[in-house]
Image (cartoon, rainbow, N blue to C red; front, top):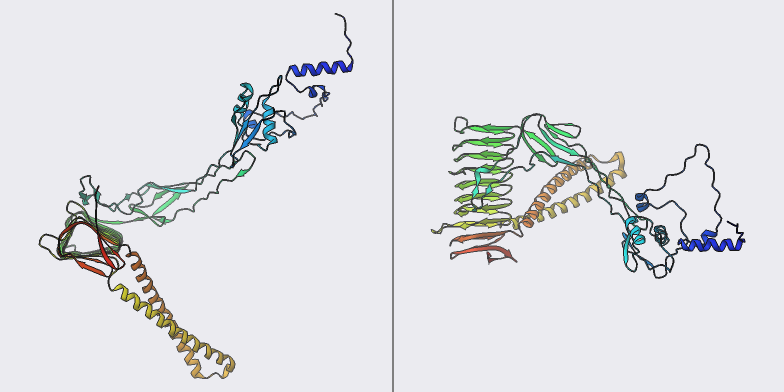
Amino acid sequence: MAEVNLSAEQLNKLKAAMARAKGLDPQAALQPAAPAQPAAAGETKPAPETAAETAVAVETRTPPTESNLAEGTYLRIEEDEMAAWLYLTPPAEGQTYTKRDLENYLELNGVVKGYHSSNLSAMVKKKVYDREILVAKGAETQPGTDGYFEYLFAPEEHVGPKVNEDGSVDYSSMSALQNVHKGDKVAVYHYAVQGVDGYTVVGGQMKADPVRDLPPMRGKGITRENGVYYAQSDGKIEVKDGKIDIQNVHEIMGDVDAIIGKIEFFGDVIINGNVEGGIVIRAGRNIEIHGTTGAATLFAGGDVMLTRGIQGGGKISARGNVFAEFIENTTVEAGGLVQANVILNARVSAKNKVISIGKRGAIIGGSVHALKGIEAMTAGNDVELKTALHCGYAPESFDKLLEARRKEAEIKEKLSRLVDTMTEALREKRMRGASTSKNTEASLLEWNRLKDEYFVELDKVGKEREELESTMEEGRDSYIKIDGNIYRNVVIGINAEQMTLDRNTCFMRYAAEKGIIEGTVIVHN
């Protein structure tokens, strides 16, 4: 074949035409190729980027300065900068787009992270034009988890009576015990897990919230090994203020009569039998009696649970709750709530609520007081036995509060005058120095003693005032709810107000509004 000699101008035109046929930039084809630089000794060439690196990270190449995408193409970045959408118009005739062209356009418009590689490739390969396509997406922060303790037992202090489907209450199901044996695993600590930072499509960083670990658990009767806690002895386990406490339990398998007489124990007392009248039981924690209870006296630092009830003129005093099948002719004082099926001719007082539920759910005779409210199915009976129900603060509490405020103001006034007198005497002592009279010295000693007494008295009266104010505030929204029959001669008292029902009624809820007791009908759908 004969050799054809082309001029430089003809050769350039040929190169440009071939470039256009291949969809390349004609100007780029005319640029002389850069000579290859030999690799230095021991130097390795960088590995090509993976698809994941291209999709998420910003490429470490020279930033583009212009784009070859057709006019009408635009990029929409959402307000939160967590997504970017590309609207691509068709290229000019004879021109095609590459994935790198689209990435250059994104970078020119500030989108530098979270590229949706598959969508970008599909737009080029399938020639997706004239509609918005998701091309970049940010990553939300992944929250971490604070360290926490997992208890391998139910941390509730007691299990109350079970309410059956028919509305009856199984008081025999109550229990305040969760026993463990020496060596049992009782808790596991789960260490904190750090969160994962997020980012926006424009390169903004979103830091995950810091997490924290908890200090080792403290408690009695436990030992720790690598974040796992074990019981050191047999006993009852519970959680108080985030601390595990394992205490011993005094359990009697049988009746308690005059032969046993008095029981005193710093932990829990459990009696699996009957308790005769005249018995005194003192427990630092809970008392459980799984039999009948006569006219006994029960003192508990926690709860009292009587599966068969109590009758005969006994007394119950508990800092916690009192649960019983029935309470008859008994005086009850509870720091929590009192719950029973029947309360008959009893004097009951609770700092929380008195609730009478079960097959009868009745309060008949006697007097019942609860700071926060009283709930029952029946109040009174057909023979119109006087039954007093009172909730909220006691009627005399308001007068006591006024008296406490008066005393507090009086002590403050006395203290103020005393301080003024002492200040003047001390000023005189500084002026006279060693020549201060003995009478002044003696008076200062006496005044200082008196000042201390005033402060002690002021603190005592202040606490009394605060308790009265707290009690009145807690009882402000108290109520009496009878979800059944209410008989004539039932006395309804709320705070300082009182009224006696002169006729039978039913399904009523009573509350005090602006010093007046108002009753509303309970409606069941």
